[in-house]
Amino acid sequence: MGTLFSNPALTWKDIRFLRQHTRVPIILKGILHANDAARALDAGVDAIIVSNHGGRQVDGGIGALDALPSVYVK
Image 1: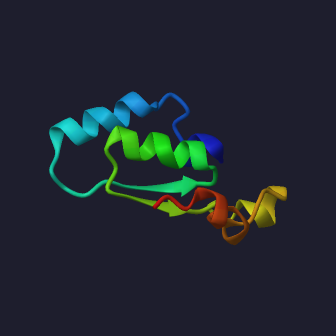
Image 2 (image 1 turned 45 degrees about the horizontal axis):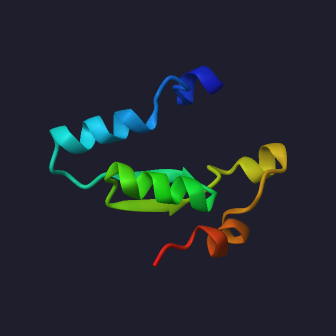
Image 3 (image 1 turned 120 degrees about the horizontal axis):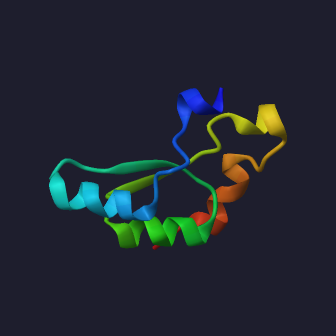
């Protein structure tokens, strides 16, 4: 299932590449940690979505609402 819906080869450099080549808004979904939120904003995203993609029901990961307070960036 992971091979269908993810590409672990993607990096923050790919976000920067997209930002350099498009003017459409870039919204990054799946942020659960403050350091990832900061890196996403530094890479040029326009918005982030705090989400675990439903993983809490699958693997017991942190819930998005539980992650939200630590991810919030002013």
